[in-house]
Amino acid sequence: MTRVLDVKGLTGGYGSVQILYGIDMHIDEGEFVTIIGPNGCGKSTFIKAIFGIADYYEGQVSYRERRISGMRTDQLVNLGIAYVPQVNNVFPSLSVEENLQMGGNSLSGNILSQRIERALDMFPDLRSREHDLAASLSGGERQMLAISRALISDPNFLLLDEPTAALSPLYQQQIIERIDALREQGITVLIVEQNARLSLARSDRGYIMSNGKVVHTGDAKDILSDPEIGKYFLGTHDD
Ligand SMILES: Nc1ncnc2c1ncn2[C@@H]1O[C@H](COP(=O)(O)OP(=O)(O)OP(=O)(O)O)[C@@H](O)[C@H]1O
Ligand SMILES: [Mg+2]
Image (cartoon, rainbow, N blue to C red):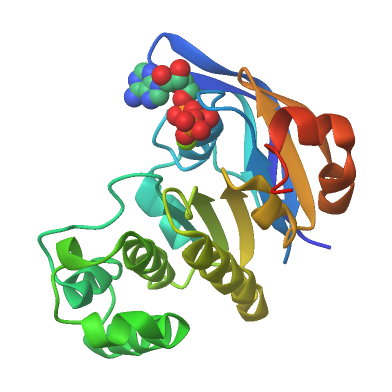
């Protein structure tokens, strides 16, 4: 099995403000892995450090056995990595179509159109909105657009930061289902999710972070059924 991402002893943060204290994490080809943890524990910072946006201090990050620590974002995109940020992930003043085009700046017109068609096939709700401004989309449609845009570069590893935040339960379900379906295209998925139960139910494995560290990892189903973890990290049951 190919190891897609291998992180060892990653420390990082923002300038002199250290947030990550030695993270170990790996993801194998085709896996769907969820990171959960309380607000402010460093989940977004971790994803950003991998993608070259937050500062990385020490440790090793390898992508398909190649060291990527400290690489620029455009180099990472060329290697097949895509990232959907937690906030500000679409350009509101551009149309849906223009947002999608921005996802493939360097592609030839023909390939770009094919990729946009493929993304719209994955998220058909966007098709009828193609010429509308992104600002006019609902929260769920906006997340769909952000994910679609990330797919234009034809990634094989997708980093998603809270794609269901602030969405209705129906949309949360839809988005997670669509993300899960990306696995059929051979895309490996690392997702940070506030709705831990929903995402873990589709995941192979999970990681729990707290205070800039990984405090637990295991099979998603074991995490879901662990009463202690449920109490502290998964929120209350609906019952
Ligand atoms: N640009 C920044 N500069 C300095 N500190 C930051 C910056 N962004 C985030 N932080 C701090 O880093 C810490 C971790 O934030 P991060 O966004 O990684 O948490 P998170 O686990 O993603 O939280 P949430 O669940 O709320 O999204 C927080 O204390 C936050 O205030
Ligand atoms: Mg976050």
